[in-house]
Amino acid sequence: MESRDANALSNGDRSTAARDNGIEVEGLVREFKKGPRAVDGIDLSVSRGEIYGFLGPNGAGKSTTVHMLTTLLPPTAGTARVGGHDIIREGAAVRDVIGVALQEAALDLLLTGREHMRLQGGLHGLSPTEIKRRGDALLERVGLAEAADRRVGGYSGGMKRRLDLALALVHEPSILFLDEPTTGLDVQSRAAMWDEVARLSNEQGVTVFLTTQYLEEADSLADRVGIIDLGRIVAEGTPEALKAEIGRPSVEAAPADPGDGERLAAVLERFGERTPAAPDQVAVRLSDGTQELAGVVRALDAEGLRIGNLELHAPSLDDVFLTKTGRRLEGAGEEEETGEHVLEPVPA
Amino acid sequence: MSSATVTTPLPRQALYLAWRSVLRTARQPIIIVPPLVFPLFLLAINASGLDAATSIPGFPADSYVAFALAFPFIQGSIFATNTAGTNIAEDIGTGFFNRLSLTPMRGSSLLVGQLTGVLLIGTLQAVAFLGIGLAAGVEIESGVAGALVLFVLSLAICAAFGTIGLFAGLRTGSGEAVQGLFPLMFILLFLSSAALPRDLIAQDWFQTVATINPVSYLIEGLRSLIITGWDGEALALAFGVALAIFAAGLAGSTAALRERLVRT
Image 1 (cartoon, chains in turn orange, red):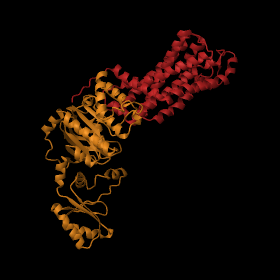
Image 2 (image 1 turned 180 degrees about the vertical axis):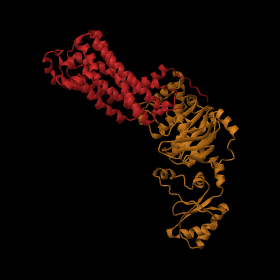
Image 3 (image 1 turned 30 degrees about the vertical axis):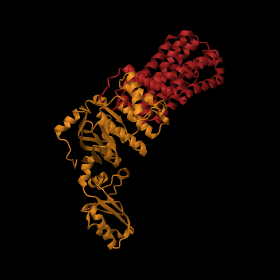
């Protein structure tokens, strides 16, 4: 890990976290045949009741990590304890204390929502009375009470995700793994999911390990964020701390005439150091913050440069990702999938 | 929150999984109708086209329908292979298998549960084939008790073929691969004593293949109850072969399941 925030836990604290319904990971590695290391020696620690956002592009290693922590995939190397139980030697005990909603809401389209509850609860050893009580309460809570007796094949994507979450909670786990729970959902369904996850953490003390490729989701929901890229955690801390690490805002501009790129860069570099930017754009991190924006505009005007686009960026988690990897988070996964790492060079 | 999970007894887990399997089966007419209709369709064709075979000296029955009634039982069981295998392959493909793996589910419960759905279809088939046979004038030479044994043997054969489907589904995780078994099973059926008694098959190579083909013994066991009466040897061979297929299929399925359930 290249960077750890000031809130990172000491070894002693980590052990306490794991015993106390948390997650503790040390040097976790997963290799696949004929492929690179999907997860390449990650360390992380999640405390009880914390929402940990695991942020990264497609193919970064998020889901592989979740599969290992939920005992579905044995690690190649390293150790992890979930709820105080070793994921390799105490798989059954780990499964007892976790609830999991994987990336694909794997549901049986021929069963109803209530029948899913009955099956899941039954396999977890709940009595029929408990299954009914908890199932009804959970279906109500996720807004599926009216649709409970309809076959899942007729559910929307959002309804399936909500049912998936309810199923993950039926046995009242103390740790919840959510693998990209809002991918593909509309804004309203996404907000409802965030509310429910926040409520579980705040009111019931559930530890949440949430993977996402959405910056906004990690920023607004997670107490702490781990940013993973190419199987390695490249930054970790609270969203505020990570953004503060970047510090100053940046200004990004595109010349109206693409041939003016170098002139534009020369002007902007008077106001701060260059940072990676989108193709055909120039960005600098402002040395004296937002107050320099007026000066930037005046300087561009004085040089007679026509500007096609000018944006002021407050530091975001995307900037953190950019700073740590040299790439923007959005689109990074697609680059990996095609094998084309088209990176914007970071000026020295 | 606290974990409320306790280890569920195996029969209770199996019951829940069987309940799901039965629900799924009942809600998919497409997997109930073909195993009922196609075997009867083939029986009708065979009975009308091969009726003259009853005049061959030494043919063991006066009615070809009675002789051939065992055929749909076996053909229906072959459909069971398909059903069991594609269901489990679908669960693997959709990720539902992972959902089950994350519960305290035991592998044996899954196998029992899946086979229960197969046996439901097998029961419907046995009732339908027997009922239609009786309606067509077939007399069960072994009587009511024989009809019950016929029923039990047909379910045993269904379960046996079902385990082969489970093995293929678990091993490959592909419904298409399971369906690829279907023609192979049909070849086995047609290269058996389904159409003629083995001693009346004129071609030596065919007779040899039919003799080493285990499907022949399953058919002959079923057939003996319909046209002969009580034939201990035929029944012992039929139950023995069904048991052997079941044991081999179950061993293969268990091994494939262990490999598939890689949870730590």
